Image (spheres, rainbow over the protein chains, first blue to last red):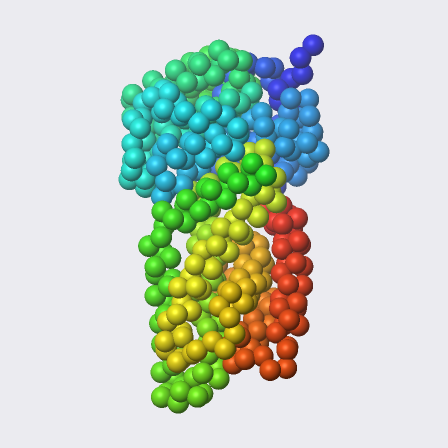
Length: 229
Length: 222
């Protein structure tokens, strides 16, 4: 039997006196797609950061691919990728150079042109600093694809993108899923993102408030908003 | 080793693309040397007596800016986090960054040397290769702890202030040894003291370079 990709029990993270994340229990099998919803400061980014091993949990247990990230961080990091609002790019280098650096570090093929084409970018020689925010986001997606992760953690996938970019995200998430990648999306665009996922988790002030089928997520989201108002 | 070389290539490429900043640092060290010479006045003998100290002060000041810049880009765009989330040994990240910083600082120091010789009317009594060795060992003594502290302070808005405050006390021994060794190369080493100062520099370099790599992983943890 295959190991769950993500398994958390009572996962908590505190910053100073504030609990940014509390009591999160998750089980995700390979290839599953989870949508994480919540208002600003709800704990979505913290959850993704904890799952990516960028941030240590304050309490609780976390197992990724059946491994303990605290004991086997390199093995875990080899198999996951995190995409945040920060593009993790070098402004003075071109898109191709940025991707080649990553490919070299991961010992992947250095021909990155197909990847650039896949995210709708030309092989431009100018530095990334001249790119628009949307183009940087597309390049970040190429960065994620080059890693060929088993677990993709994507924070605000639609942020900074134009309508064409929205379609691109939908296509890329579907492509990742076809490859068997487990995908966790955190997004404010509830209805759009819900169409990509099977399950959803609603976080409110760091706590899981609702979990269920992604198709019910828009209703749960609006109910929470009405309650909060 | 492949990872280290890939990271070094990345750091040198980023350094080369940002070479305007390096020109700025060179101008900055030149301005410092000019200020020192103006402060002392037209006393050529006094200038020559303190030339090695002025040279190293200029290199040290420029190095803090260089070191701070080396992590600025990484932090601003989240690139350092991207690297730390890859299956890459933190020590490899450190040594690649430190070696790139050392090469850039050496380039800066070697570019400054002829101008210092011109400004302070220096005519080295010792050989040029020995002078290069002294500069390389001295720069290595600054860069090893400097790269570590630059990483530690990279997320601080007051990095430009905090970095020198942390770094300067730690580099006093290698700077003293480098100034003394430079002095001996410039003025002549009648008593054969140079090997002892070079040995001292080597010891400090060995300590700093061997400790900083393993410590880097701890520094970069949250």
